[in-house]
Image (cartoon, rainbow, N blue to C red; front, side):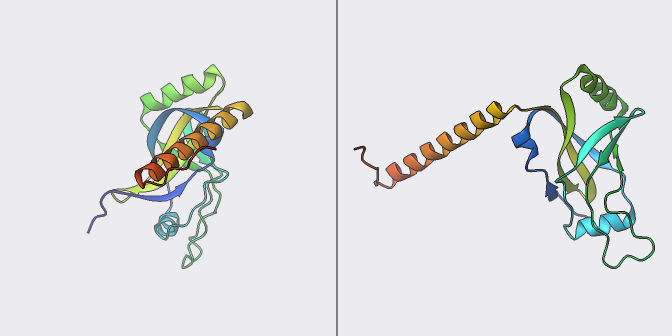
Length: 161
């Protein structure tokens, strides 16, 4: 039976905190057999992962896929460089935008889509410290407003003193 839908394997949680996401692309990943088996067990880490463009091709570096437990001499290197599979027009567009300056390619998540491993990469601009603080303050304010609305709905509104 063929898998349906999207099953997330790993996410880069720091990416949305450290970068302003401008555009998101879905790409395939060129993998070896034991890498896919290890991913099916849900084992991967995107903590240090980043994407680079070399000679007109995009590569994913720093992605850690641990060795497959039952693998033998055919096992893979855990942190090897993996090629991302995109259309030529997309690669050319990304090359042009990253050359402009200030933009980088950041992997956001790794997942199975209809049985195939996909990587979601983003064209992003690094955030400054004050941008990160502003985003955290905005998130805290929204959370506090949601709590207040929830308390009011339950009839337990906190009185202001």
